[in-house]
Image 1 (spheres, rainbow, N blue to C red):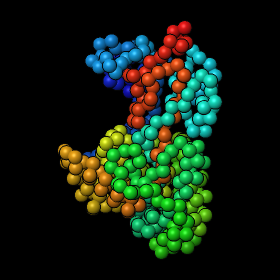
Image 2: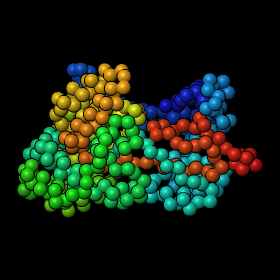
Image 3: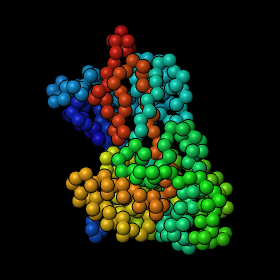
Amino acid sequence: MIDGPGPWGSGVFELVEGYSSLRAEIGLVSADPFVATWLPTDQPRSDRIVLAANPNHWNRDRGPNLDQVVFRNDLDPAEALDLVCNSEGEVDIVTEVAPTDAQQVLKSQHARLVLVDALRVLTCLINRDAEGVPLGDVRARRALNLAVNRDELIQQTFAGYAHPLSGLTAPYQAGVPNGQRPYPHDPAAARELFHDAGWPSGRELRLATLPDMEGVARVLVEHYQRALGVEVSLTVIAADRVLAAQHALVEKTLPLPFDLLVFPWFDLLADAPPAVMHREFYHSTGAFRTGPTVPEFEDLMGKFATSIDESLVGYATEIDKLVYDQALSVFLCAPQALYAVNNNVTGFEGYAATFELAETGVNDRHWSRR
């Protein structure tokens, strides 16, 4: 949040104009022990946010290398992308370029495409408490993983700009077990396991998704119908119902109305993913847990939380192996972050977790120096 003048982020820049804030509600995860999370409701921001270089920053080797940074919030994504790709002087960096727009950047004479292996994952939450279906049975959950063609999903919905997941930890983070590979696409094995687990004849698979993941969900519908031989109903949560749906997911006071929920999330700790990822998904205090607690997981997380030495990565690895072996989610992919960057902007490589401009500069050919 940048809602008043003063140091911004690491202090490399200071806010001198505008604001960008965040409004949120509390979602109660647990009353005993008391655990709550924030559910964003709105993000008010000014049309312009201006940051000025802080010349007194302690780490001058890092930056700043720019006198001023102006964030323009008055442009829609398509207009901003057109400006960076086809002109100079209006926009230098566009964040969150859609994979479907990557080719526009690649063909540009003014901009280049920067790819970042971001700390992001895309999964399906599995409602292990769903009434009348065997999603508490590991065979059914493995079937849901084996039914997905991850390579096809990544090509169709992310234009190839994603890595398949083998567990909840992205392949470039610490804590991925040696030799652990994404579940293979094996429709025959998936159908056999699904049948052996006792999926009721005639019962459809209920798939839900947030609005911005609808394309992913529709691909999954095709995969599950082909591989498992079941009908799949798709619910796209309306934009004006997302907050209510988040409350229902987090607070767990009513039965969840889905079997699978397409769910994107992000990490903040590349070297200790369970602290932000696995805990939220599967721990007794996790906001996104969609089933009963798993005693072995609770034990490992307790050891992880109290580790203060190199055993931390060891516990992280054991945790990811457990959730993979138990197929506690449908592990889909880790989408990359895409940026369109003016060719004369230097030093911008992108960060895995945040948007940082500390090391960013411009060369003598940049429009601001001509």
